[in-house]
Image (tube, rainbow, N blue to C red; front, side, top):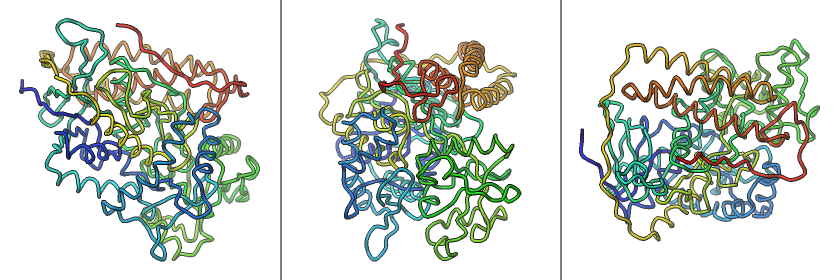
Length: 531
């Protein structure tokens, strides 16, 4: 067993939120960044559309706030929304100072528009904004002396005072147990401050735009450590994921519709443009409306997909604004300058998560959470397009300010990980089968449209899986696949519990049993059981 690794701050996750925190803390703190695979393998790197901020003449903070509140269907926290919107321009300036190559026009940032926004306010780097931002931040982090990066390391569990010999209440975090997946060894990290930035949980569903890393690790670990979670029933399904047998999780950005893309039925059904039949905002309606409309048309006509047509724009325009989408589709034999793109909805963004305040603090002292892992109150019942990347930066910088102001704390002697357990020969195949079962029944029973009966069926299957996983976890050597499955089943349980508590249809949660809105909008907050 190795010695304890001691740092001032432990950041778990290497997306935009985690790297923003690391770079801002580096001048004053010794920082460790834990990332499950490589630095560029998280969801931030996959973000295509852009970052929302009020920068254009004629736009205003009030307008951006109003658009966010409308998309959030009455559940956005006004203070969190105003805080994010007002700090967004400064976050963009910070990225520009770091050298992020945003798309410009006539020497100014080019601003595009996406569904739900009343103005052009989306800063972007063509159609690969996340990749451009992440590449810039990763280069900076790798050249920052006070930041140590641990790639191919996965969070096992947070260490709280529950694990200490005197068996306290679990109200303070002192670091984490982390699996080195290459050396197959669990390490102990000690830190006065721990920041969860592990992203969302899209891999709990069969179809998702998320990378394989999005297994809800931070949400599950925070729940086990005693943190409240909120609004987990609100899973955003992106309306337009590329539908092709050789295209895994390839997102067709919202900006395609923002620049005039039209959703149509296939030619054998007349190529009818159907969004005006569902909402007066047509293709620019919020994502939940568009996703449900596509789901409706697919079920009505027995379709595997619908078509997104941007071929009326010039080839030059498409090459300039959507080069990656054009190239990827071309690789698959789809010429988007001449024909429509086959698309299908897919799980995209986890609007709920670990409950935090405006400084990213959780209920457990010394533990912070930022980015998609959290429920800050910004997204409410539905995330407005391109609000997520700016939330990452704004709340990461707020958490940094809180850590800097926090009084110094001594971390006690921490117990090392007990890894006397054995590896079972059948473990991997059972984990693989359980993962498949989970993703399929979550897609079938807890997807875009829900019912009480479907949720009950999902809850029953989750209970059976939890028993089996608990036996594996208690008895056998931990692996990345086992840890991810453990976390996904925990997150699935939180999603189903939250969905069963919401007896209305609001935002991203649509129930055939409760199709109407309740008069009062209330967040769903789950409190972990006392241990």
